[in-house]
Length: 469
Image (cartoon, rainbow, N blue to C red; front, side):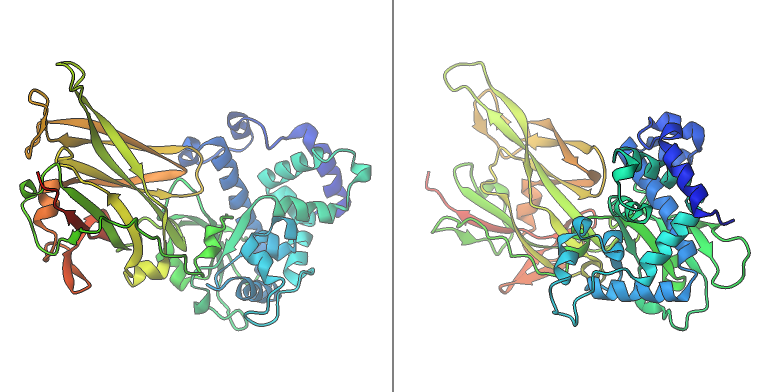
């Protein structure tokens, strides 16, 4: 039922006295119950999810209009090389909140005329619907009331319409239309499904169904909306602004490796690890990686950001006396690796030139490879595992066999831990080349053995420097 704007305005100005988007999560839950699965989210994440959820429902109502659908499609094509996403800030013409990649489109004609920064039919439709019916979206209504209360004296503020633009633009939302190329809004007669990124879950979410004809109930709950669903059903996903969402259209510079020793030779054969002594230098790198499945990409994601860590051991020995010998865990963090959906679909090898270990000593009998994926999350992900040590603490000499182990713990910001794998020095050097489970990758005429940590496939390139004893 439509509300007149004067009534809506009175509610908004009274709103700060009644509601607050900054209330503790527990108090907000007394006003509106949440699904059990959201209750384990951090407060900031939970508020993001609630904002995206209700805006997805609001968007569904607006998108029932054909002109709004066409306007959205045109905006997406103007602002996004992938052709399937646009920020809410760009849609509303709010330059202050637009990501740099979209802002640059206002001044470039690389792909035709630059988008115009002006009020569009879709912008006006969103504002009109909000002014009339924001009370149907209680979390957005409370959040807007709080937003207004922080702006001070209402007599010195801009119009309610402009305040709504500022409020929406400040939420950092993105409208993502996966498989947009499957649908033609000029002739489309089906229904619209809207959904949102639940953050806590990656493979499916609830959605809301809106028909394009008739005046019956809208926003019917769709229990499961996932990637497969969106191929056959026009689905709009409300997610969260991340400049990485846009930057995959450019090719990043290839990382360079430190120069190995002048007399280092590439190991192009399998070797018994005991033949490479502690004194020798084994410079181990990972030239390329590929991701072989979409399990890590998240719900309707366009890119996946992978973070690798190496867990190793560090032997500490006091050579001046019998005491002081021991071993600690050691960790090493590598640069973020980003994969697009097409990188995954076509299993493209991506050049990364990771310096895995500049000198893989005999004492490092095994090492751990930890794989995390980074997301718009609050908090840290942690993982731990054991690595084996090859060292005789009585004789204070490295040994080819494992003599003990030490635990290694890794934590990564805004991430999910996926998997870890133990890499023994013996096994890695025994399979430098030749096929095993994952085949080979030919590089410079050498058939390197392909290994994996979860869905990430890689291979080692070792440079060996023989140091005379």
